Amino acid sequence: MYRDRIQNLATKSPAAERLKKVLIDYHDFKYGAGQPVSQHQLMALADWQCQRLKDTHQDLYQSQNYHQGLNFLFSDLYAPQDFSDRDRDLERIAPKLVKLLPDKVILTLAELIELNLQTQQLDVSLAHQIFNCLNYQKIDDASYCHAYRACNNEKQRQDQLARVHEVGKLLNRYARSRMLNFSLSISERPAEMAGLTALYSFIRRGFDAFHDMQDIPFLMDTLLKRESHILQNIYANQAFPFQWQESSHDKRCNDR
Image (cartoon, rainbow, N blue to C red; front, side, top):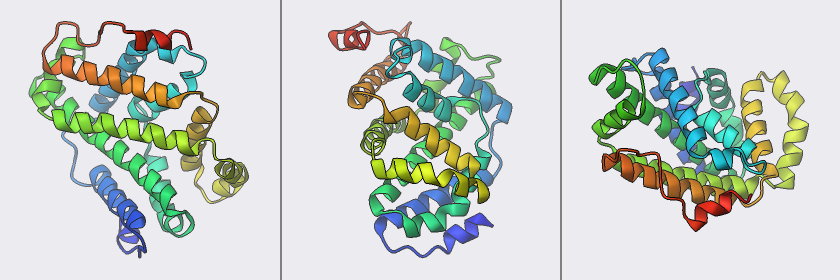
């Protein structure tokens, strides 16, 4: 039902057309042909990746300044949760979003959905390799990296990192907007009455996580630098892929 509504949505700008396309792509991915992996397998992978990110970036994760923001990024990208209610809310309200939001906000929303879609697609491919192609019974550093290389999608992984970095810059731009803060503060009750609680909660958590954070560009630059190095380690079949030599750049993190 929601797919037809989005498909028939009249768009008047490239931003709206981009949002429309990614919503259709996301819907088809979520509700189309059966996935090659089970929900249990996806949850096992998401849980392992979430913990790996916390371990890798524990200096940042334990920082009072960055903890809430990283908790939001790690949990809403990698935690083993069911976001079906949030996704249905977004599809249902899409026609109003296109009419009411300015193009720059619509583009930001499209960027977030594209990143989320790409991440889920990569996770399905990785979980399929781990459990069904390579027949591993559990995930550890060795099985994870073996399957990672077997997916043969290094370019898509590099693009994913670039998207995460770009999304961080967008969040930095809008998280301090007084207009958005005011809009969120007065929209909680209407959102509840409209049955959009899951979507509103997601937006509110993200806004709150980044609103008071200092030096977001440094955080995103550090994440990109570290994860790019780890990506190289994995494809080079390094013995300890999730370790790196601490530099003066990394030492700055410990002072925050």
